[in-house]
Length: 161
Image 1: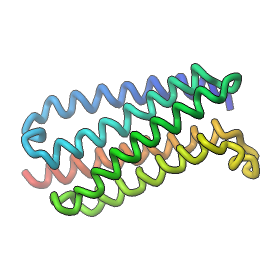
Image 2: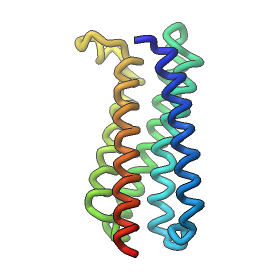
Image 3: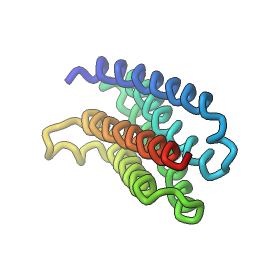
Image 4: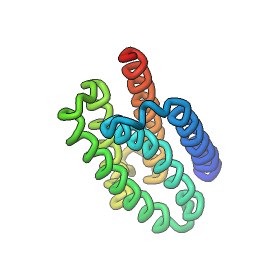
C-alpha cells in the first residue's frame, strides 16, 4: 500500500464529500430550523471534515515522521469522538431515529480505535500491518459510517415530509 497516495486521494475525496454535504444542507434550509436536526447536520459534516484533516496530517508526517500523524490522529479523533458522543447523548431525547443513533455510536467506537492506534501503533504489528495502515482502514470505516448517516438522515427527513 502506498500510504502517501492513499492519504492524498482520501483527503481530496473527504473534502469533496464535505462540499457536497454543504450543498445538500444549503438546498434544504428547512433542516436548519430544528436544533436537533442542526446537531445531526453538524455531526455529518464532521464525519467528512475530520477524516480529511487526518489524511492531510498523514501526508505531512508520512512514515518518515510518525509523531506528526500519530499526534494529529489522536487529537482529531478525540474531538470527533467527543462531538459524536454529545450527539448520541442528546439523540434519544430529541427524537433521532434509532438507526441514526446506532450509527453514531459506531462512529464513536471508530474514533476511539483511531485514537488508540495513534497512541500505540504497535498494536497493529500482529496483523502484519503498520499503524498508519490500520488507521487508513479505520478512516475508510468512518467515511462509510458518515455515508450511512447521510443516507438515514435524508431518507428519514424525506419520509417526514
